[in-house]
Amino acid sequence: MERDEVLSRLTALDFMAVDMALYLDIHHHDKEAIEIYNQILKEANNIRCIYEEHFGPLCSYRSMSDSNHFKWIDNPWPWQDCFNYHLKGEMC
Image (cartoon, rainbow, N blue to C red; front, side):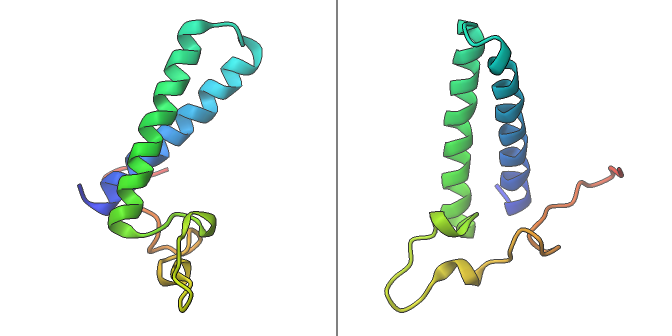
């Protein structure tokens, strides 16, 4: 997968996790929703690991660095345009 595809998938999964967490705040005994939520978190973690393995850390506290270099600084930061993916053919 290309970087933008992985980042887009991760963004969608993280959004779903937040949405499900809001639902579970009110329906905290919904077993099916809890299973879906856990499934989303597992998939998001897998995608996050794939992203970081191929494209670098997504945030500083997930960046293992050697004693000579802090690797987080090597990647575009989330507020830089080159970090974010662009939806092709879609405008907000």
